[in-house]
Length: 525
Image (cartoon, rainbow, N blue to C red; front, side):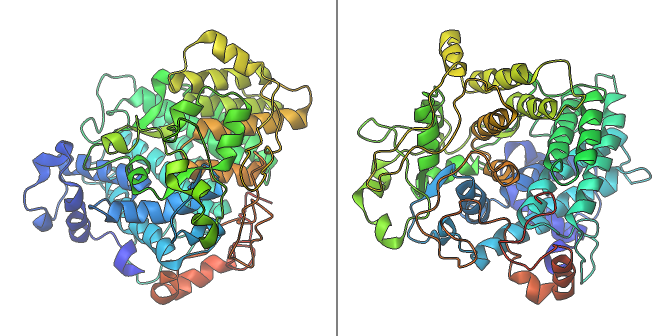
């Protein structure tokens, strides 16, 4: 464990060399392996690296695509059924836990993103060499953002002791981790919302907001609401308390697209979901086709490209080796992601971090829970969430959007060789009963989160919506193909058994069940 979770500065700075081709970091290309102290310029660099790698892992020619593709994409994206894998080697779409792929994501996160952010937080804390309360608060927000999908994938993970340089690192329960998320976000809000000056912090290194404190405050509060909603089934009183605190917190939330959080990328540090689309190893899922077509959703052509025949087609998840060879499942006959943010420009379209549509749909659910989270009605929040997503994707025709929100159609049948019916689901037009409204809010959130599969998969597991298709096949005896949510979590990466055995044992003890895909996370009772 020590080899990839310790944050010794010399090893850290050697790792950051691989990101140095980005123009924002050129000033730091001077003998980085010999640097033994951190100055403000290096701090900017480290924060940029922590941001990018907190989402995409390490990017070097193919290694970035390898760590991101083999972990986040082939698991979260496929389990959320945004995409279906078309590669002969994509066992993960048949529910297989591929050890080397799990190792990739785990190692890159702890040895890069966490190591770099740990240095930023250590340097900027009260009494640190580069003490700065604003920078430290921003780093707290980013820590919550990048750790949330890791614990939501595995459950108990190294958190409080990660980066301590010890040979063994114990795991922490998901409940304790989420409680610390709330603590960090409350502290960050208190610091950020109190600042009213013109100075920007991490102005050169912040790939999201360019150091804008007001926007970071809104991001903090929206992320706080996300975390509160996430725990609301397991701990409803805690969820209510934290959601109401987030809404009441000074500085507001991301409720307009002008405040959306997107990560700036470049040809050398690309949007890897877009970049790997050129590999032709995945296509639009059948679930996306059914919902988008059934709803006559104008975002269909924004999300995906038509096939060579001019149609929009998706494929079922869990294709067998034999089924992958059928012409209807060939990549040429199914839709890739839209080339405007895909392979045509090598993935230089910004990556979605947090948007107004998500906040508004979170507020809709919170209001449906009868929490004190704003003056608008559930329906108004729901419809504003749709409006924000449409605008974000460039759908501007008011009549088209109005027709969509009044739609009474349901997900469409596919007309494929498997006689796949339409996915079970509600129409878009706001329903009259609470169960229908919950399903509608969750389904619209699933659409609004696209293509962020990590968050979408967490929400599918938490809410059970949308009601995704069964997989055609599962090669995991613990996860039947008939249950599209049979994977409750990812199993721990094999590398932990050899490098951090006692730590791994502590994690399994805190799971609430065995290290299997069927063991539910703490927040998913």
